[in-house]
Image 1 (cartoon, helix red, strand yellow):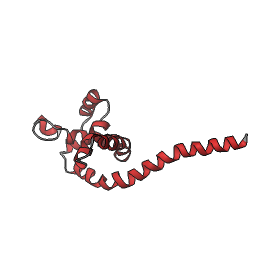
Image 2: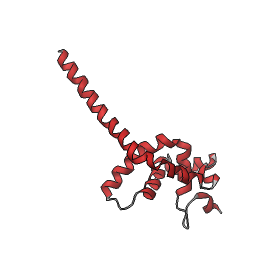
Image 3: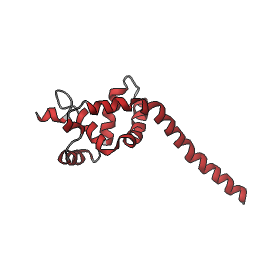
Image 4: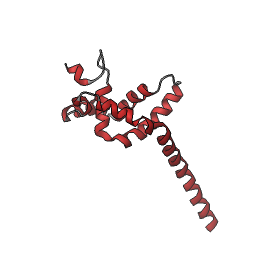
Length: 129
């Protein structure tokens, strides 16, 4: 009976540990090297885009519930090009999990507002002008 419990514990550790180790490894090699570039996008953006006011954040939430998926898609399209459809979906899914952990929701709103295409260029502030 105790060998069954030991084997179940090993299986549980294996089933939980392998994905966590994989995410940490992917984060280390694929996302962390680009964080400075992403922070640079926000630093060089219009201040109202980089940190949108509460009313704009409410409008973003009304449009997209959360800024994370769209902002992540905008970031990955700037960093990676020439990916197959399958590669793009896997990479985008992993970035949607890991990028908000590094930046937090306020900076995700900033990426959404800064990188959104407005018909002529990028940024919600230039669209309002």
